[in-house]
Length: 550
Image (cartoon, rainbow, N blue to C red; front, side, top):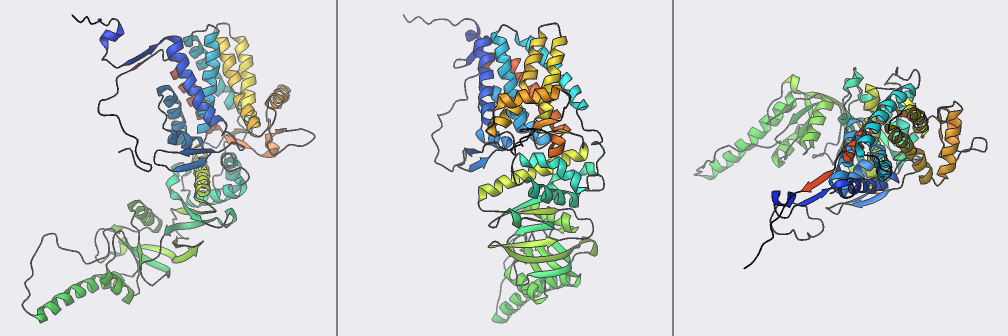
């Protein structure tokens, strides 16, 4: 007689095949360990001297970048606790567009320090209470560190914009930040609406063309469409535009019909009526004053023939999103099918021309006057991966511009703010009486991550630099940061950031530290992990390279 052992406890309650981890060793410390591994990956990419990561995703696409948001997106993190850090990084990327690396690395550092406290006997709830007090104090101190007068800013003043944008761009493309910041600022100022709070990042487009170098990059007021014009007319100036979504062709009937032809004469007339109909439609468009036809679908050969006859330029834009932007740039109302447009439906363009840039033929749509809605940054570089990285730097710059339109306050960059926060929080921890004080002191210590990482990535001695920074901040100079360009004999690498002109946006720091502290506390609150048995079905075979999961 077979005797089956009866399950007891949580095993008897859950389905067979589940996993259950609980307690400090199994759940809390394992979670912390997973988060530490993730922040170790992103940490070395922090700052202007951050190293690049080479990530190959499940579609075999190669990414060479030091942008933390891209790295964690493409890694497909599986561990549930590490996913919380990834979500905090994504929230920062969506809110501000920059500072995802600081969020993930700082959260990892907080958890590493929490692990030391747990091993010395503190309970996670005491650590969470200390961390919550510490982040409230941090936000108070951060407001005191804001540069006086920075809250009043003209978002159309290029110099002020570049000052605030430079640090965000330098963290992605160190050494090229001056050229890039100037380009991005030009593009953003061109499309900035009357009320800057309504600035839309989608209005600054990026076109990447292989060849040339960064000095060949430019900003175009209007759009750049990859591809050639359809007909033989390649250049038109000061013209009206008509946009047809479903294509420029003779339309087929909805229902099927049979035409019975008795003689050759009837066949000839049948062909002529089709021609006459297409010509009538194209002539109607030409009579309305339009010189350019933009098609969202196919352009028929017969229709093209008549467009050439009536000297109409034909462009084809197959992407509906691109078509919408084109309508926004030119102020055109898109029509569903080929018909005579009303005067209100027509848009206006200063010039459209087909140009050859580095071997690629592109159509440049310029709209210099009037309410220009879209600006395009044309990026040039030697390889696709360099262009992708430049595009990420431009995205960061544009997002920073959007953030400064909402709140233009700035705090000292180059780790000056972090050292001052660490110093002030340590003083605050001495005034606390409960066990929270140890957690607050560890929170303060976590801020040293930024100067330590910046100096390590630049190949400098971190211990030496951190002690010098503390010394200068203690003597009252709260704006001393690290000069990564080498420093001089007098001050070494610790210099006043206002002379180096390195500033960070207050909102970037505010949200990065807040999200990091929230993520760390969320991970520390977990004391049990219960995983159900994965859904059934045969085990998935290894797919050939280049195949999608679906």
